[in-house]
Length: 109
Length: 115
Image (tube, each protein chain N blue to C red):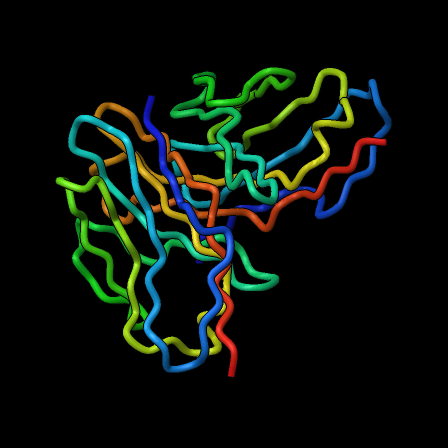
């Protein structure tokens, strides 16, 4: 079955430090991967998707099919990056989106 | 601006009650979803609908049913609420894959407590 794994429940860093939120998936075909973010008291929203190859709010994520990973990275964390981050996967012939368990990022001043 | 509206922000029900959670979207999206969000478990898909009167089970459909009589409305039904269904319920909608802007839009959630 398709699965998304986020091994870290909590990641704490200081402002200005690099950040990497890990995401691994299990799917034998060609998936589409996403990162969603939920800031405090806000709705869950799309941060970025791998097919766009974009950088949003300084975050990037590269799909590594060999390692089946889609880690989210930012070189210099900001306090406003503190939020809950979810990695998500969809795959061929379905519009269903499967989410990981989420990682809470805390950025201290 | 896309809007996904969940009828209740907080709901308290008793064990055994029948519970209806309502979700309405105003963007003419074909797809609608119900997830539950639990600490440490992330978002788990309960049911998914890709058209009116069409539905598909997600990962945890047991104890739930859904109704989609109109394109804009997707209801989640707990036939007989139990304490283990205490959770945050999130509704979402989207266009089908391959259509522009196919990301999920989420509602603000309904925190259901079953006593």
